Image (cartoon, rainbow, N blue to C red; front, side, top):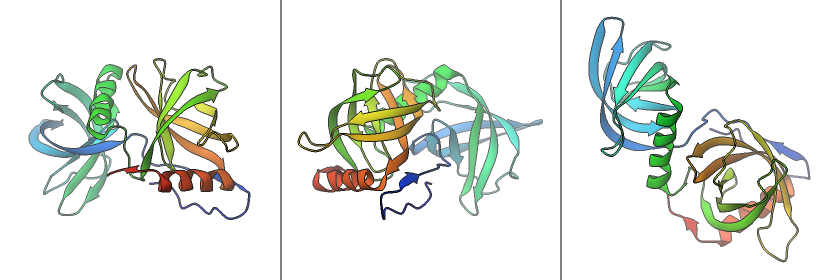
Length: 219
Protein backbone atom coordinates (compact mmCIF):
# COMPACT_ATOMS: atom_id res chain seq x y z
CA UNK A 1 0.00 0.00 0.00
CA UNK A 2 1.27 3.57 -0.60
CA UNK A 3 2.35 5.69 2.30
CA UNK A 4 0.01 8.49 3.39
CA UNK A 5 0.33 11.74 1.47
CA UNK A 6 0.08 15.28 2.71
CA UNK A 7 -0.92 17.83 0.09
CA UNK A 8 -0.47 21.07 1.96
CA UNK A 9 1.81 23.74 0.51
CA UNK A 10 3.74 23.43 -2.74
CA UNK A 11 6.25 20.78 -1.72
CA UNK A 12 7.05 17.76 -3.84
CA UNK A 13 5.18 14.65 -2.79
CA UNK A 14 7.27 11.50 -2.78
CA UNK A 15 5.53 8.12 -2.66
CA UNK A 16 6.78 4.57 -2.20
CA UNK A 17 4.90 1.35 -2.89
CA UNK A 18 5.17 -2.16 -1.58
CA UNK A 19 3.02 -3.83 -4.27
CA UNK A 20 4.56 -3.81 -7.70
CA UNK A 21 1.73 -5.33 -9.75
CA UNK A 22 -2.09 -5.12 -9.77
CA UNK A 23 -4.15 -8.15 -8.72
CA UNK A 24 -7.66 -9.60 -9.03
CA UNK A 25 -9.85 -12.14 -7.26
CA UNK A 26 -9.45 -15.67 -8.59
CA UNK A 27 -10.51 -19.28 -8.10
CA UNK A 28 -8.25 -21.93 -9.60
CA UNK A 29 -6.23 -24.91 -8.28
CA UNK A 30 -2.54 -24.59 -7.53
CA UNK A 31 -0.13 -27.49 -7.12
CA UNK A 32 2.63 -26.67 -4.63
CA UNK A 33 5.84 -28.62 -4.05
CA UNK A 34 8.42 -27.97 -1.35
CA UNK A 35 11.06 -30.51 -0.47
CA UNK A 36 9.49 -33.92 -1.05
CA UNK A 37 5.97 -32.76 -0.22
CA UNK A 38 3.31 -31.87 -2.78
CA UNK A 39 -0.17 -30.54 -2.05
CA UNK A 40 -3.01 -28.84 -3.89
CA UNK A 41 -4.95 -25.78 -2.86
CA UNK A 42 -6.90 -22.96 -4.48
CA UNK A 43 -5.85 -19.42 -5.27
CA UNK A 44 -8.29 -16.68 -4.23
CA UNK A 45 -6.20 -13.82 -5.65
CA UNK A 46 -3.70 -13.57 -8.49
CA UNK A 47 -1.38 -10.79 -9.58
CA UNK A 48 1.63 -10.35 -11.80
CA UNK A 49 3.76 -10.82 -8.70
CA UNK A 50 2.06 -13.57 -6.75
CA UNK A 51 -0.86 -15.65 -5.50
CA UNK A 52 -2.95 -15.88 -2.34
CA UNK A 53 -3.78 -19.46 -1.34
CA UNK A 54 -6.66 -20.51 0.92
CA UNK A 55 -4.59 -22.71 3.23
CA UNK A 56 -5.89 -23.56 6.70
CA UNK A 57 -2.32 -24.33 7.81
CA UNK A 58 0.02 -21.84 6.09
CA UNK A 59 3.69 -22.57 5.69
CA UNK A 60 6.32 -20.53 7.61
CA UNK A 61 7.32 -17.15 6.21
CA UNK A 62 10.15 -17.41 3.72
CA UNK A 63 9.35 -21.02 2.73
CA UNK A 64 10.43 -21.58 -0.87
CA UNK A 65 8.36 -23.80 -3.14
CA UNK A 66 7.50 -24.57 -6.74
CA UNK A 67 3.96 -23.83 -7.97
CA UNK A 68 2.07 -25.07 -11.01
CA UNK A 69 -1.25 -23.54 -12.06
CA UNK A 70 -3.51 -22.38 -14.88
CA UNK A 71 -5.05 -19.00 -14.06
CA UNK A 72 -7.66 -19.21 -16.86
CA UNK A 73 -8.80 -21.82 -19.37
CA UNK A 74 -7.29 -19.94 -22.31
CA UNK A 75 -3.88 -19.63 -20.62
CA UNK A 76 -1.12 -22.25 -20.56
CA UNK A 77 -0.15 -24.17 -17.43
CA UNK A 78 2.46 -22.07 -15.65
CA UNK A 79 5.39 -23.25 -13.55
CA UNK A 80 7.14 -20.84 -11.20
CA UNK A 81 9.22 -20.62 -8.08
CA UNK A 82 7.68 -18.82 -5.13
CA UNK A 83 8.13 -18.04 -1.46
CA UNK A 84 5.73 -17.29 1.38
CA UNK A 85 5.76 -13.53 1.98
CA UNK A 86 2.93 -13.12 4.52
CA UNK A 87 0.09 -14.96 6.23
CA UNK A 88 -3.48 -14.10 7.20
CA UNK A 89 -4.44 -16.32 10.17
CA UNK A 90 -7.44 -18.48 9.39
CA UNK A 91 -7.48 -17.43 5.72
CA UNK A 92 -4.26 -18.46 4.03
CA UNK A 93 -0.91 -17.22 2.80
CA UNK A 94 0.50 -14.97 0.10
CA UNK A 95 3.14 -16.27 -2.27
CA UNK A 96 5.58 -14.06 -4.13
CA UNK A 97 6.50 -15.40 -7.57
CA UNK A 98 10.29 -15.19 -7.38
CA UNK A 99 10.98 -16.89 -10.72
CA UNK A 100 8.48 -16.91 -13.57
CA UNK A 101 9.04 -16.57 -17.29
CA UNK A 102 8.62 -13.14 -18.81
CA UNK A 103 5.97 -14.50 -21.18
CA UNK A 104 3.93 -16.06 -18.38
CA UNK A 105 4.06 -12.91 -16.27
CA UNK A 106 2.92 -10.92 -19.31
CA UNK A 107 -0.02 -13.30 -19.81
CA UNK A 108 -1.05 -12.88 -16.16
CA UNK A 109 -0.96 -9.11 -16.51
CA UNK A 110 -2.97 -9.26 -19.74
CA UNK A 111 -5.58 -11.34 -17.91
CA UNK A 112 -5.75 -8.84 -15.04
CA UNK A 113 -5.94 -5.88 -17.39
CA UNK A 114 -8.76 -7.55 -19.35
CA UNK A 115 -10.71 -8.37 -16.18
CA UNK A 116 -10.36 -4.94 -14.61
CA UNK A 117 -10.02 -2.61 -17.59
CA UNK A 118 -6.87 -1.28 -15.89
CA UNK A 119 -8.62 -0.43 -12.59
CA UNK A 120 -6.74 -0.54 -9.31
CA UNK A 121 -7.58 0.41 -5.73
CA UNK A 122 -8.13 4.18 -5.95
CA UNK A 123 -11.01 5.72 -7.92
CA UNK A 124 -10.02 6.17 -11.54
CA UNK A 125 -11.43 8.35 -14.27
CA UNK A 126 -11.42 7.85 -18.00
CA UNK A 127 -8.65 9.92 -19.47
CA UNK A 128 -7.68 10.56 -23.09
CA UNK A 129 -4.67 12.77 -23.65
CA UNK A 130 -1.38 12.63 -25.48
CA UNK A 131 1.53 12.03 -23.13
CA UNK A 132 4.83 13.80 -23.73
CA UNK A 133 7.71 11.84 -22.31
CA UNK A 134 11.44 12.54 -22.32
CA UNK A 135 11.98 8.79 -22.79
CA UNK A 136 10.73 8.86 -26.42
CA UNK A 137 7.04 8.15 -25.80
CA UNK A 138 5.76 11.31 -27.45
CA UNK A 139 2.98 9.39 -29.24
CA UNK A 140 1.66 7.52 -26.21
CA UNK A 141 -1.85 8.19 -24.90
CA UNK A 142 -3.27 8.06 -21.39
CA UNK A 143 -6.27 5.76 -20.92
CA UNK A 144 -7.28 6.35 -17.29
CA UNK A 145 -5.88 8.22 -14.30
CA UNK A 146 -6.05 8.25 -10.50
CA UNK A 147 -4.12 10.01 -7.76
CA UNK A 148 -1.81 6.96 -7.82
CA UNK A 149 -0.93 6.91 -11.49
CA UNK A 150 -2.25 6.09 -14.95
CA UNK A 151 -2.32 3.51 -17.70
CA UNK A 152 -0.48 4.60 -20.83
CA UNK A 153 -1.38 3.02 -24.16
CA UNK A 154 1.73 2.31 -26.22
CA UNK A 155 2.92 -0.52 -28.43
CA UNK A 156 6.41 -0.12 -26.97
CA UNK A 157 6.13 -0.23 -23.16
CA UNK A 158 9.28 0.47 -21.19
CA UNK A 159 10.88 -1.93 -18.75
CA UNK A 160 9.38 -2.28 -15.28
CA UNK A 161 11.14 0.10 -12.91
CA UNK A 162 11.86 2.72 -15.60
CA UNK A 163 11.46 6.33 -14.44
CA UNK A 164 9.51 8.68 -16.69
CA UNK A 165 9.19 12.45 -16.80
CA UNK A 166 5.64 12.97 -18.06
CA UNK A 167 3.79 16.04 -19.34
CA UNK A 168 0.05 16.00 -20.04
CA UNK A 169 -3.17 18.03 -19.92
CA UNK A 170 -6.24 17.22 -17.85
CA UNK A 171 -8.29 20.02 -19.41
CA UNK A 172 -7.44 22.02 -22.50
CA UNK A 173 -7.71 25.41 -20.79
CA UNK A 174 -5.48 24.54 -17.82
CA UNK A 175 -1.68 24.43 -17.49
CA UNK A 176 0.24 21.28 -18.40
CA UNK A 177 1.01 18.91 -15.52
CA UNK A 178 4.52 17.59 -15.03
CA UNK A 179 5.09 14.47 -12.91
CA UNK A 180 7.73 11.81 -12.37
CA UNK A 181 6.38 8.26 -12.67
CA UNK A 182 7.67 4.71 -12.53
CA UNK A 183 6.61 1.78 -14.68
CA UNK A 184 5.09 -0.86 -12.39
CA UNK A 185 3.72 -3.30 -14.96
CA UNK A 186 3.33 -3.72 -18.70
CA UNK A 187 0.69 -5.54 -20.70
CA UNK A 188 2.08 -6.96 -23.93
CA UNK A 189 1.70 -4.41 -26.70
CA UNK A 190 -1.28 -2.74 -25.04
CA UNK A 191 0.67 -0.42 -22.80
CA UNK A 192 1.97 -0.01 -19.27
CA UNK A 193 0.82 1.01 -15.83
CA UNK A 194 2.78 3.78 -14.11
CA UNK A 195 2.66 5.13 -10.57
CA UNK A 196 3.42 8.73 -9.70
CA UNK A 197 6.49 8.93 -7.49
CA UNK A 198 7.04 12.69 -7.51
CA UNK A 199 4.27 15.25 -8.03
CA UNK A 200 3.68 18.72 -6.64
CA UNK A 201 0.89 19.17 -4.11
CA UNK A 202 -0.92 21.50 -6.53
CA UNK A 203 -0.81 18.96 -9.35
CA UNK A 204 -2.01 16.26 -6.97
CA UNK A 205 -4.98 18.47 -6.08
CA UNK A 206 -5.73 18.98 -9.78
CA UNK A 207 -5.68 15.22 -10.43
CA UNK A 208 -7.92 14.59 -7.42
CA UNK A 209 -10.36 17.26 -8.64
CA UNK A 210 -10.39 15.84 -12.17
CA UNK A 211 -11.12 12.31 -10.97
CA UNK A 212 -13.86 13.57 -8.63
CA UNK A 213 -15.72 15.49 -11.32
CA UNK A 214 -15.51 12.72 -13.91
CA UNK A 215 -17.47 9.51 -13.79
CA UNK A 216 -14.99 7.40 -11.83
CA UNK A 217 -14.71 3.81 -13.00
CA UNK A 218 -16.57 1.55 -10.51
CA UNK A 219 -14.43 -0.73 -8.33
